[in-house]
Length: 109
Length: 114
Image (tube, rainbow over all chains, first blue to last red; front, side, top):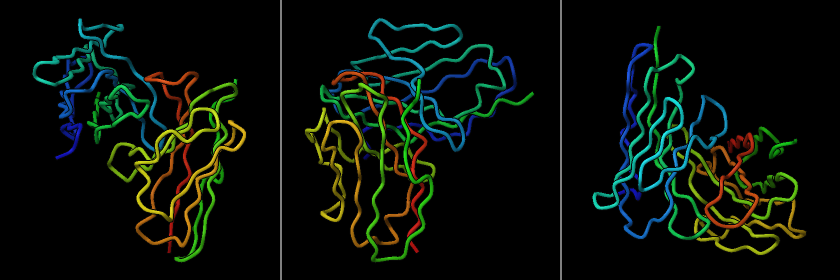
């Protein structure tokens, strides 16, 4: 079993839709959590950190449930430019990041 | 400012040859990380440095893989006696400080072993 698990998708949604991705992690010692975005044939880039209280950045909302060991990302009012792979990432109090396989999102007109 | 750069961008080599992949981090960044990414997968941790000190090499697949960062800036990942299974995208990232900071990734080196 992988330490960070995600549904690979693809999620195909129309413009304007709301879409949610979940991610589970197996190591309860994980301390920091992130969502990275990776466009096709490009490098991953930090989308947002995930805090226990939940946090929002414009159309993006991230939540963390430590008891159930899952992380979510909600995207409202999807844009064509949101099409990408979203990588769930955890850190175990070291500098090492553990990436999930990514969830592919395709937004269509 | 300049981001993380990697060279070469593409490398084709024959099985059994040694290859050296270079990473030039963002100037002043303390930490440097190496990852390997297979198609359809997330980056897989290989090793990392704080300044010139290698902190964790637990992700290196075997002893054919090694990395160095002798002056705390540029790093080289070396793969000896390459095998076809080594074919992948090798990505470097750097962060300003040690710890779970934002990591900035380079464009990667696509390695193909024939």
